[in-house]
Image (cartoon, rainbow, N blue to C red; front, side, top):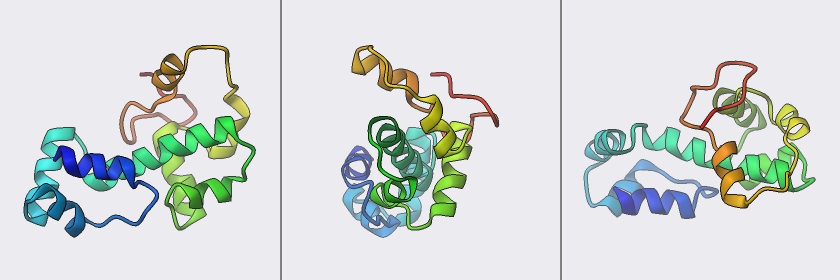
Length: 131
């Protein structure tokens, strides 16, 4: 399971499918999904979406690239899906997040921990995640 998760962390922007990840973990597809969820507390698809949103949060804070460009760079193929998923995880739209998130003079490890969403879909509408 760790090998598959590491592959997802490395290649989050590429199209990843369950059969390929199951082969990496050396298990069947159904067993992979069940075991991944039992081990990490979320399905592989949700983990990958959260990982992509985490990366997009960083790009929104630290670059002036367009939201559409960031959407495509992190592996989403649809701006609508990206915006909906971002709002579900973070609790606000990518544009609103960019306006609110200011780069502060704090160690990177603190900033990452503070800005990282706790888990998929827990952020209530209009609030920021609490780690």
